[in-house]
Image (cartoon, rainbow, N blue to C red):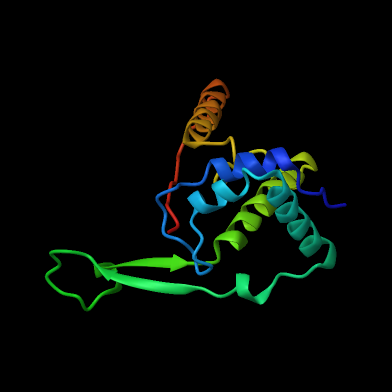
Length: 158
């Protein structure tokens, strides 16, 4: 069962958004949305819209449209490689807000219902590189206690 969006969570999510980011395809910046939701009537309407999308199981097509802006990096010897450019993806800001809310609720439900392994640390709220280091240290020390020879293979998937 899906949990409806709550006013307090909506506001806290909006407050975390960076005012200096580029406006989305709807021409709204986070600063605009922060001003809009100061009006109680508008925040309730936004929440009702988001809850209706979830109830209907519908994601509007204008939230799926994106524009990519390509900016060349300065002082590159050659511009024949994608690494010589910055890619900026612009989406509908309101859609991004709804996606942030959905992501937080899904993550909570997945963790709460034990669908994510205890040692899954990447891309999860309230879990960091420090948690990974502590977990790794724990396993190394546990191996030492059992007189195991410890080897570690580390790689980064980018």
